[in-house]
Image (cartoon, rainbow over all chains, first blue to last red; front, side, top):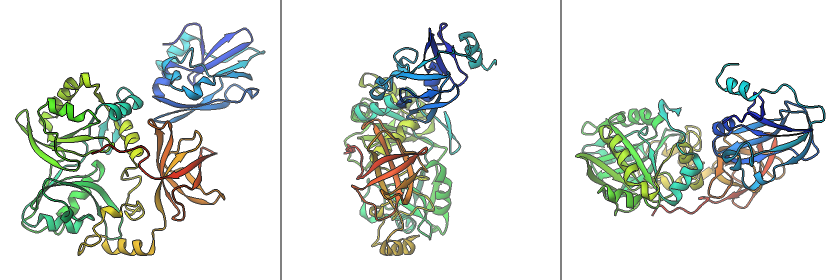
Length: 125
Length: 344
């Protein structure tokens, strides 16, 4: 459950980079650890994020976790479908459960490859 | 799995929301064998218990069950529990797991010589079968289902004596089956097997908490404790005020006449905030009015709900604010239950 074509953070976010646009969400591992997700709060469009910033929250029936931006840039879009259907993050974390789209003119850095993230999950890093 | 008062307990199986829905719509199973099981027997058992517990056992007849509290002399709550009355000299008590040994100790203090207290904590297990299809499921196992809410019937299962209690902690029609530990695994497996086409699901502590919170049922350690009296928790209905005496009576009577300094209220989110225990509560004018004791996402209402000990001037209909990790969430003070109960 670690798609090959994505990059990852050690905070269990995935990043899909397409040109100068990056979208991100939380990984399969993260959604499974959280359990049933009931609320997702996301940053406002236009917010300037630095990698590592807390930019939102994911709350499950069990607990609440911060979302850390894995990239630096300006928020272009957020997935407003998650307002009414937060469980999408559980059912499809890498596609319909995407959270934030960011303009990354300066590229992305400090992220793990799929293989590195898999190794991280296994406690190998 | 999580440690819960020394018991290794499942938080969830299929997931809190699926388990919660199974109990509200079909039937769910809870292994609540961690709860205490205490028998109190012998001539004088009724009077002994009536002096130690707040509720009046004279209010129920043989075969009935009663919610009651064990208080200390200051009116603090040692535990809340259910008493099942087989006869005036034979009672079964189900205390909370973490308080069971305190309850047993208290029951054995100043005990009349003819009364015996038998602690069956490790000898018996309890499976709670809860939900609208619970009667259908028990019928398939040839267990009795026709008795009323808050009554108990003795029965047999696979050659073991069991008690089938029409009670629960979910707000749905349901049963709690108290049985010797030897037969608990088979009972659990049989309930799952015969309930498959009814849509039965095993349910964990997570769903147990969302279900009881939707009912506004108190949980000891949250809404009740040595520091939180039944008067504050608005459980005066579980106190036999007309009884001659019981431990805590004087302190509770004083608190009742003076008025409690804080009162348990239910709050429901106006926006999207989810309250959690220990969050602070503010009035509209910003003054501190209390603390959340339990809070969760209501799977039925799809909003945050909670219970909170608040200043006694606050009442149903009022708006309050809860500090949810630095952001003020708006809540309405409401009556419980949050969703209609279907226990009967």
